[in-house]
Amino acid sequence: MKKAITIKDIAEQLGLSRNTVAKALNGQYVPPKTREIVIHKAKELNYKSLNIEKNEIAKDKKYRILLISGKPLNNIHYFVPIIKSIENYCYDHHYELFQYIFNKDINTFEGFLSYVKDFEADGILTIESFDKDFITKLIHLNKPICFVDFCTFGNSIEGKYDIVETNNNQPVFEITKYLIKKYGITKFCFVGDYKHCLSFQDRYHGMITALLQEDIAHHKSDDILRSDCFDYGNVNSIKTEILKLKHKPQCFICSNDFIARSVCNALKELNIKIPEAAMVVGYDNVSEAVLNNPTITSIGIHKEQLGVETIKTLLRRIENPTAPIKRVIISPKIYFRSTTYRKEK
Image 1: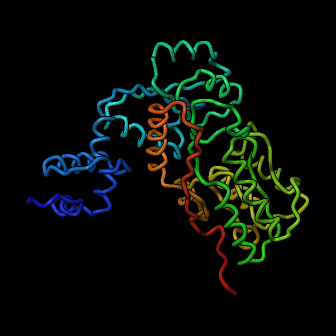
Image 2: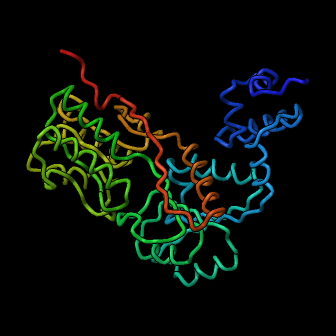
Image 3: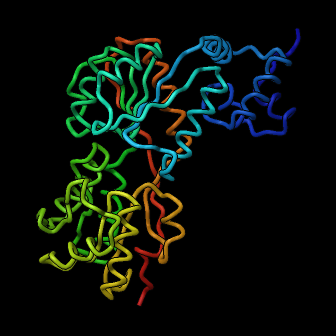
């Protein structure tokens, strides 16, 4: 009897790791060209796999996917790899992908609705769109939807949608506890609008929960929680807010790296040494965190993985539109850098 072909056999012939081949055959993220090579070799060797058969069936379906955002995403470094991985996945599976930017100050929902009807979308992805009224109307369209992050009222509305997000609470909780234990820091300041979106809210709660567990008193007046329309990129505005604080923070936990960089620049202008007098933590792990001087400690995920998980979650919703609402959580990693490192005395 002829020996059945295994993943190991395919990996050896292609000079790839078994892990890479297994991911390609099971629909997990690998570069599109790598996946194509693996699938081709698997067919050539007559590799029998239920997963690959399912993948080929899905590939034959010509889904039309509409990507909605509240702003042009390609100008934001965090979203570039996410969008790219979604585009690659759709291209690889022959899905049609179109982007629609909805700004309530410019667009009407009726105009958007007309576009959706003309496009005949099978499913909708939304990224960086947190307007509650728009999201409520969107859900009521009764289309399969996958949200990347969500507005702060959570998944209280019934509908045909799922949410993909980072585990925002736990890593902020962990780094807050770490800085308390390692350096004895007790005065923390959260910077950002925690009501802006679910991820910012979870990051804020992660810090607060850690402080409560350590029995450290904290009040909202110790934080900079201006609404999202506040110019967090303006160093002078950040300086003004820091000077207003009653208690001098020993560590600033920022809702993203963009804000963390502004805080670093404001502290420099105030002659507050980083990290000796004040530490700074960001979120998203974008290139600015690495290029900043000093480099910024940040929390980030594999962005390509987030993109692939988003499109795959939407496809599952399209295939099973009445399934219960799911929150898909992707675990991030803490990247320790100069803004939280002090040399031992």
